[in-house]
Structures are given as C-alpha cells and as structure tokens.
Amino acid sequence: MTTQHAGHIALGTMYFGTTLGRDTSFALLDHFVELGGRWLDTANNYAFWRDPSGLGGQSERLIGEWLAARPGMRDHVWLSTKLGADPLEPNRWPETMEGLSRESIRRAITGSLTRLGTEHVELVWAHVEDRATPLTEQVDALGELVAAGTVSELGASNHATWRVERARAQAELTHTAGYRALQLRHTLLQPVPFAPIPDGGHVVATPEALDYVTEHGLPLWAYSSLLGGAYARDDRRLQRPYEHPYTDRALAAIDRVAARHDATRNQVVLAWLLGGTPAVTPIVGVSTIAQLTEIMDARALILDDTDRARLAA
Image 1: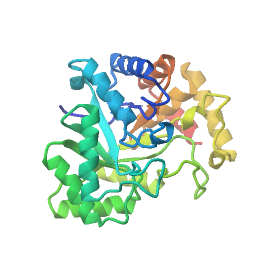
Image 2: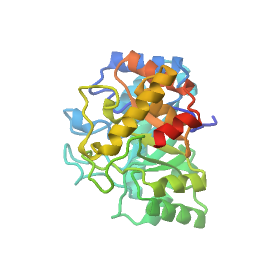
Image 3: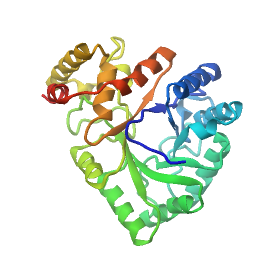
Image 4: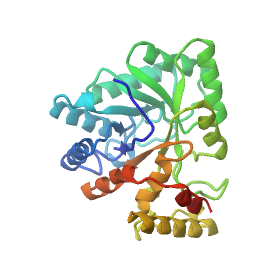
C-alpha cells in the first residue's frame, strides 16, 4: 500500500476506548471511512490518564477490535501510532515513561501490533524525546522496525528540530531508515512566544521547524489543530498563551473568510493547514458524527490568495 500525507485529515482516536465507548467509536470510524478518510492516529499511551489502570493501550485495542469486526477494512486505512511515552507504572508519568531504548522500542511495537491486530503499521512516531538514551541507539532500533517490514515510515513527534536533523544524519550515515515526517502542535492562531503550554509535553511548531520541513520536503502533522474546540465553542476558552491582541484580529479574519465561503471557523482553519506551505496533515479528534462531517467537509474548501492574505494580516 502506498501512503500519502498531503491533503489528508487524520482522525485522532486518543479517547477511543476510554471517554468514548465502543459503539460511538465504531460509528465514528465507520463514518470516517465512508467519507474517504484513510489515516487513523493513535498512540500506545492513549489514554492512560482516563483509564482506571493508569496505563495506556485502550485506543489501539479498540481500533484493533473495530478492524477485526470489519473484514477487509485493514486494506482501506493507514495506521499511525506512537511509542515512547507510555508509563511503565500506573499513573506515574512522566517519571516512568518507557523511553526510546532498543528494548523499550521492541516491547512497545510488539504491544501495539498485538492490540491493533495487525502485522505492520504504516507510520510509527517517536512520541517524545528521550535524551537519556544515546541517539545512535534510538536511530538503529527504529530503523530495525522498517528493515523488518513491521513499519513503513518513521516520524518524530514533539522533537526539537536540531534533534531531528541529527537523527536523520545518523540514519543516513549508517544507511538506516530515518525520520520522514514531523508531528508538532500547530494551528492558525499562535501562542505568545516562549509562553508555557499547559498541556504537558506539547511542542509548538516554530518558524524554524516549518522552514525545515519545507526545505526537506517532509510531511508535517499537526495536533491540537482546532485547539480543543476553542475556535467554535463558547464553552471552550482559549488557553492563556493564545490570549493576546493578534488573536482577536485573526479570529475576525477567520470569520470574514468563513462568511465568504459559507463555511465554519473550523473548516477555514483546516483548509488553511491543508493548502498552505508547508501543507499540513491535521489530526482532529471528534466525539459526534456531526463534528466528523464538518471537519471532513473542510477538504473541499479551497482558500485563494485573497483569503490567505486576510488570514495572514
């Protein structure tokens, strides 16, 4: 199977199997595929903070159950999962995160494949940095997954750009598969520079990171692309780092563009990501069919130069 990144919206399944039960999750997965969706994004630590066990794996397990209940469906979806951030002891995060040692990577991918009920995944991300394990060991261990046919592509999530570059250089030096995609927190609204983000472990896409993926032709995936519903819902307040004068101007511009196209704020933001430079694969989590339909309809919204100029002002 040949996978693609640009032009796709990935369905975020973080709370499948915990906050969202089996029936709701199955219905969302079914509808996502019906609407032409391909990428399912999960992680081996989703969602340990919402499960009584204090450990992750619920999201992957539910996806595996859905695939088992839908014969032939595996050929219609691409699986993206992450490893390195599951706690080894219940509710003791981040101090007991599994990390990216060779042993941890092997153990994590074995668990993910078992829960997902598949022999391979299209994309595996190093979920967070591990500066306690030699980078050479991380690069070699991740490259072994591609060499074994277990994984098609590797990506770096929540990594500093210089670490990504160093890892890619090491992989090239040793003729090993290296990182071919980046995943960072990114959306149209930007936080105050250097302001701490309340969500633990989140790394915001900087201008340098955007330039890096553009220069090297690397896919960029964006999480928190709709800021947890804050663009559209009155009951979801923007986090403090986003409360500054530029935000008010940007939201007004989004509203003007949305009115011009009879679209929603969410759709404008997603269209801005999908058709920008670099083109971004947004990861979007939903809890209802109506929300899913809204975000998938954003693929049909094409912003012209006038729209983008307004959104950049």
